[in-house]
Length: 175
Image (cartoon, rainbow, N blue to C red; front, side, top):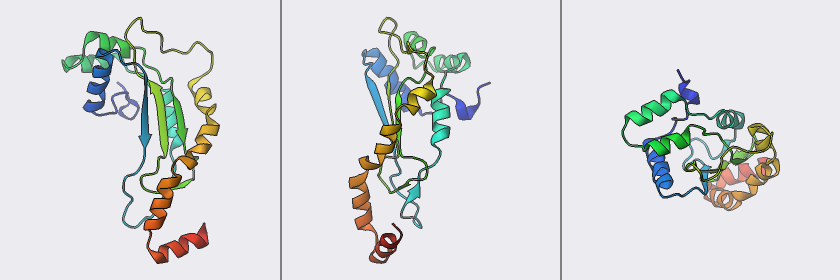
């Protein structure tokens, strides 16, 4: 049985049905996902980025099992061709993220994943031709990971301006 925390089905039905629609229309370009916090807890004005290693471990180990494929087939929502395209599902994308320990504000991108969608048979292989591992490919994007900080600069300024006057003074003294 698949570890639920490592399952490729650790998503919602909407994501899978949209992937089926993209597959049906032959849309196999890159998909982009950004992770951010829309709202911070009331007692917090910022949070600290953490958990990148766990995200990378999940993505590098991403596989869909025959048991999971059988479950999806049993729902009657997905075509046989689409399910076959998922058999060899592997993460072949790129991850840009704030370095661990970086402070961030609401609405500021913390992590961005860019990866190709599964392809129809005969549309080209998703497997890389090089001998590099998933982890090496992700680590090669270290410069992008470090530059992620600048992607949220406008959001940080907006969030900073929304802090109360007293909190701004404290923030200025600390940072």
